[in-house]
Amino acid sequence: MKIGLALGGGGVRGLAHIPALETLDECGLRPAHIAGTSMGAIIGAFYASGWSGARIRSFIEQHIIERGDNWKSLYPKRRGLFKWLSAFGLSFKGQGLLKVDGLLKYLIESIQAETFEDLEIPLKVVATDFHSGEPVVFERGPLWPAIKASISIPGIFVPVEHEGRILVDGGVANNLPYDLLTDVCDATIAVDVIPMPSEACNDSPNMVDAILGMLDCMVTQLVQVKLAKRPPTIYVRPRLTDIRALDFLKAGDALEQAAPAMADFRNQLKATF
Image (cartoon, rainbow, N blue to C red; front, side, top):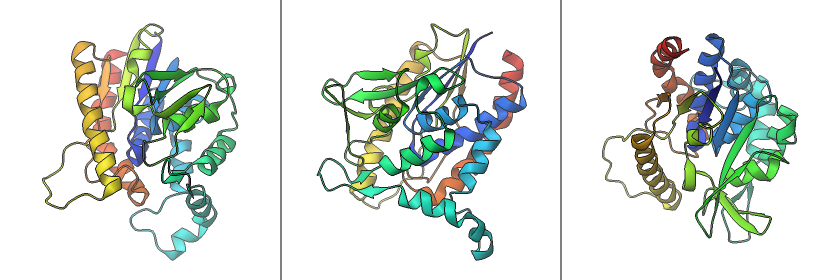
């Protein structure tokens, strides 16, 4: 049976995909095809290149500050933390606040795959045509422009100019792209990392939080409509709360909060496959 794995976008909350990958590995299941949007595209590229879920977790943990870390535990991580923090750059073009070229260069060097053809598992990466709003799906050629476009949140990251198009974050058009796999797979697994609604807060959001919050609301509505029409074989949505999309200081929280959902996911996998 060919299994298709779709990994949704959600910023740092996309690290919650890692426990799902570890659960697949534990069950001895390997997807035949992967589709990813935004952070799901990054994690998907690592997994498609042959990295196990455990190896991806180890890599990420060397680049984040976790609860309980002290100077002694942070010292071995110093190189990874420096590379992670220095990978972002400010943009002065007025098209976005940040550039992510350094981050993508570092990630692609880490997985040692420059093109889609270098990957062990076929991967589809989703971006959005800014002017038409249509999804743009990459599945061949260089990984760099595809992933860069897929994570380019409008107003936050600089858009990508590619083959005459202006491309932005794939979540605008298709944040949970399991529908791209239904024609080539017998079953699909979709991992959704958009956060659950949290308790009401009276604080006014800043500019970045307002942009990201509106994107989360829009994405949630679009995904719910798609799920109602044609759901995947297995749908996984860890309960993620109080983690903002770009709050990398809560990367460890994303991994921790995803853990409780894995028992049910494991049971679904065993019942289905």
